[in-house]
Image 1 (cartoon, one colour):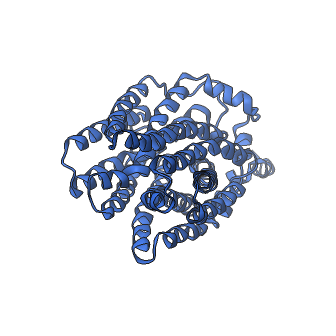
Image 2 (cartoon, one colour; image 1 turned 90 degrees about the vertical axis):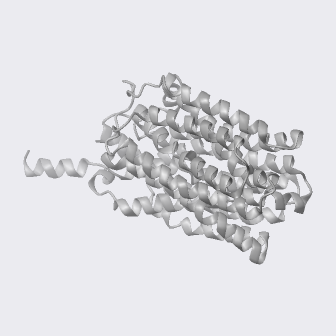
Image 3 (cartoon, helix red, strand yellow; image 1 turned 45 degrees about the vertical axis):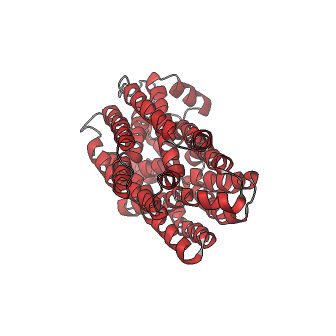
Length: 423
């Protein structure tokens, strides 16, 4: 090829293909955003007993606000992903971070179920969905080389875990020192530190579509093709169970601690331990997926994670409820908590390529949050009906076994009709 031809080819390349931003900067922006938004959101369960005392609404009514937040977080993900794919991730992240801060700051001023649903469920959860995994994972995938995507998604996912590990003790400490209202304000203003990440992660996936050499599919066609794929449906079913587990534990673990007559500090530290060990789980999962996506099958890793959860919950039910038991259980659950995200995102990218990943992973996240709605809401209803959380734990075990089994038939080969990814 002549020098002139080479120069013309270089000009024809999409800008992202010519000059990707530094890998460390992309990971810092994506993981940092996930840490700040997830840390604030996952620490909210610490305030459930206080909100009950403050408002007098009852655990079930307040749980409904948290449950709606789980559902709305999921509903916003495919929409936010679609906008990010078409318009750009930066604008979506900017709006999302501001909404998280606004909703969190408004919580102390809400004294009705509708008010709590608006602050926790609509503003904070909706903002966290806009600045959540579907947009962050897709932006990371778009901005880094394909060979590094497996470990990169693990690192971004670990960011959310680090946020939970960091913010739960901070929230508990500020509450003890200055009150729960001050703690919520600290969480709200802390999320604004993620605003610069919107500039780093700006851009859309038009460059990927162009690099793939194929026209962008229409949204309806793309979604119908995905939903018609049995492996994609099974992946959504498994992630539904993950959402049930995560939302129940994040919302009600402090209540479980209180029901076991343990100090409230144990609840805060249990949430922190979950976040800490999820960092290790996310890194381990990223390594297991491998830089080339080939050390182990991602569906097998997912089946193993869900089976481990079932065993962990069963042993927890049989063990005496001491602070040590609670922290050990939190560590095991933490290792499996959100380590499902990298292989799930990896399978979506493998099935359909990264150009539409934010939209299609957003739909998987919606399934996750439908489960999350039931986990958060039924946790409160189960306690209201029976005075304990035992039936929720039984449901956790059954669903975890089912999730382990549904991943086994998944085919990891990419459908022939998929739009090619960027090389």
